[in-house]
Length: 281
Image (tube, rainbow, N blue to C red; front, side, top):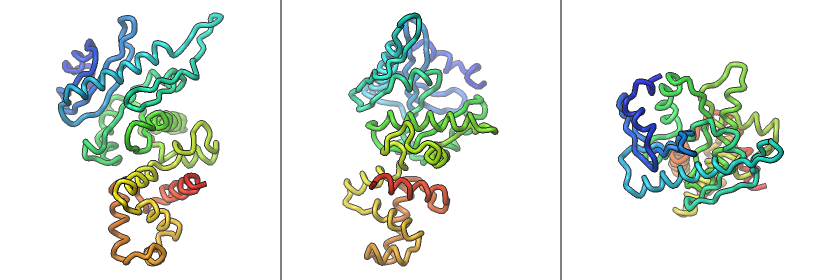
């Protein structure tokens, strides 16, 4: 394992608060905060970062790590010799994050990684390529949520990542790197909404396009919905939307650039159509 021989990594095992780490073997960087409980190292919060951060970002990372430590410290109570999860224990942080203690209790042995695709200048495919060597060499199993904007839905996205991780591990031939979008259709058909709410099971592309439309006065959400409804018939879509035919390709290109969608994949289109139905139902 590459970490076992990394001097830079070993030095990070004893730090406290928000810190910046630069690898001494492949040049990768990250913000991190170690989780200490009663003097014992319990894990680490890692936030991908492409550049050396400001003092404010280090402080926020440390604050976020303290939230996780608090959840871990208070996640259970002892009653009649049994450990009982505090299912209703919710922390609201100043970052707008809701953390469900039961979910963290079950999966706290995992590493949680928040990746800012925008600042990194990559898409989900680029992230998969960059993580592939680490996953392979470290023999990790990875579950990946849908792409999303802001921190207000991080709790739901964490649930997506956990679901994808479980799905990948429970396959006859385990999947080392499993994205929620690749297993959501099977989950949805078998469980309905299951443990999810409507807004956390639908495609992450929908809120991204809706927010973009609101901020820029565009109609990308309705364009994608109409394009899929008419089975990608560009002529009919342009006619219904009252667009010049040359305008539609530009809109679709912008949609794919914002969301990373592959509209040539039939499972992606099926997921999107179900998401539109659920979103407007």
